[in-house]
Length: 478
Ligand code: ADP
Ligand code: MG
Image (cartoon, rainbow, N blue to C red; front, side, top):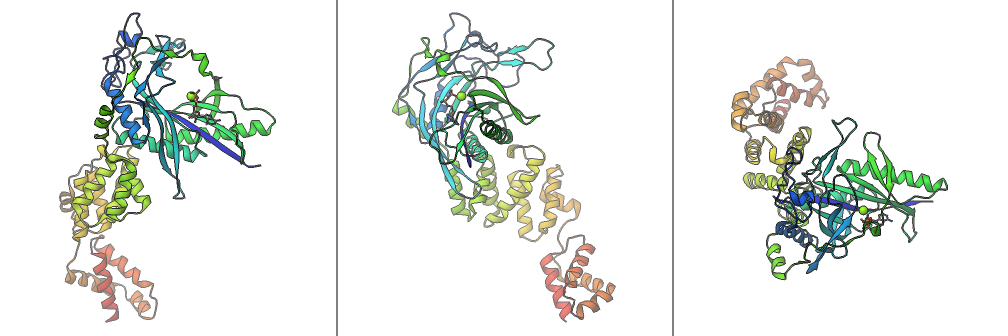
């Protein structure tokens, strides 16, 4: 019997407003515990929340980017539960009437096909504080700096059918919120995290199976691993004659397993009701149009344009438009180099991306700027250096040894393009290897590569490879 996986994600994105969603306290990350929680965030009696207009603007921006419906009137509701890091005893969220509903994004799969994934809703809410366990003995610490930080919770339809699709979807939303500049996307700091709802059913079946909710996963890699583990666990439960129970589970990345945390609350456990301290949120058509004007070129569009304007494959264009910063970097290089989009793409996706990955850096932190890389590529194109030595120059620039021309001069990497000089070296190589020369003349064509190698060795890789090939062929034939 074949099994099918069904997944729906709830993604929590922290909106990058300066102040909190209902108070003027700062949202900056990393401050000393409890220094950025004001009376509203602490839930003091009699304090009144005031909605942050920026948070609304960002939610609308996201809604427009996913082709969703923007509610002219939406309502904030209290979601009641007790948690040590939730001093009010309730979280202000949106329930029946979210600000954004019925949108979708397109994801691309490894085989090149694409699928539309429905987004049920995206609603505004406040984050809770944090309970701290590390560094405490027998007690926990409470840090309320995060309390009241604006979140946009993005809830997908149960449209995803594999762990890979879930990752592709999560990456797409991540890329989108960063393009829109509404979330910094920093997953380590928890600015972008998700709950994965997972169930299994027999292929062909109409009804969904019972789901488990995997809480608070903050890496693409862990989402994939957690889902794969959970799917296997559920299949084993059912095949063993048992039943999957609806519950909340935690993924332990060290052990690579999910563990039951609590049975799942139903909505009615939360006793949602409209928050009497907040008026309904009314959004005018004018406001929506104003926000629409601030939409940047979005990743799908940019990808199409890269394919059209630069003749790139869908795969290359997809990689290069994965983040706005990378796309901007690439375009700066292409424009400066002029006429070599594929060479530029190879360097950005190759050397640059590898170095960024290896050093765990974003494009914005690259020591080799787009201008520096374009200078390097120009030196390849005008034959000052070979492609191979260019990699050495790149490494030196990455290490902070100066720009292209300085590194070439300092290391003496300038390519030898003087035909007379190359011919002299070839003559010397042939004279030094009479046996190989005789062998080549006797029909061992493969020895050609040997001679090329010798010339490159003598010149420390600096002879222009194309000239070496041509001149060597001429000599051997002559
Ligand atoms: P809650 O807020 O209680 O978690 P929702 O009904 O809003 O519940 O659903 C949350 C997420 O669970 C959505 O992303 C939805 O697509 C997903 N989901 C619902 N039913 C299933 C199911 N049977 N299997 C997998 N995912 C599901
Ligand atoms: Mg949920």
